[in-house]
Image 1 (cartoon, helix red, strand yellow):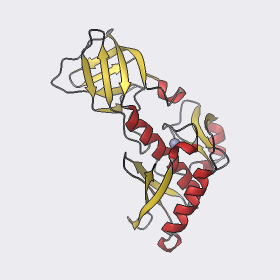
Image 2: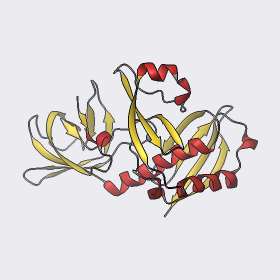
Image 3: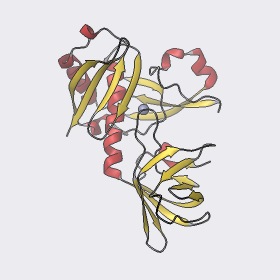
Image 4: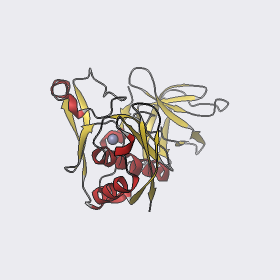
Length: 235
Ligand SMILES: [Zn+2]
């Protein structure tokens, strides 16, 4: 099991860690600040720095078996063996941009009153898919409402809810395509002021003011139950 430091502090940019398993192209650590691909958020990229100063570039991060996190590196590069101490540093500007997009999608969830059927974010755009009629999605209205919510400058807080509480409140799960992981007794939750509250395992800003301003750049049908709203953030 890899300790997920990004859950306790999404602003942690680096940590010291010990290699627990490695093979060509793959390194697992006892703890990490690298977020693994999941919930529509891409995995972190960054660098692993060994005590002799040599560096391994992490090209992607994914979930491994048994609650581990896999750092993907060049398959041709020699990898350090178990027990090796190193420093793990994420590409922070990239991650912070993803956190801005991710947090903004929580607000978009609150603006559009419809079930979310999917979503994804990148460093230059993000989208949510809604099960809604196209004529109810008006770009200018969504953009104005979204920026009004951002301007309210709400705090973002993490918490947890028990599986039993979640089962009793199924309406909390707004993203139909991403069911929260159950079976560990509780599920991580995110609260954005009084705007949004739902289970989420991603990384978020502390405050919505860091989002900047958002533009709705496209609204398109991606199928009967998928009407896609794409946003771009401006600074
Ligand atoms: Zn989230």
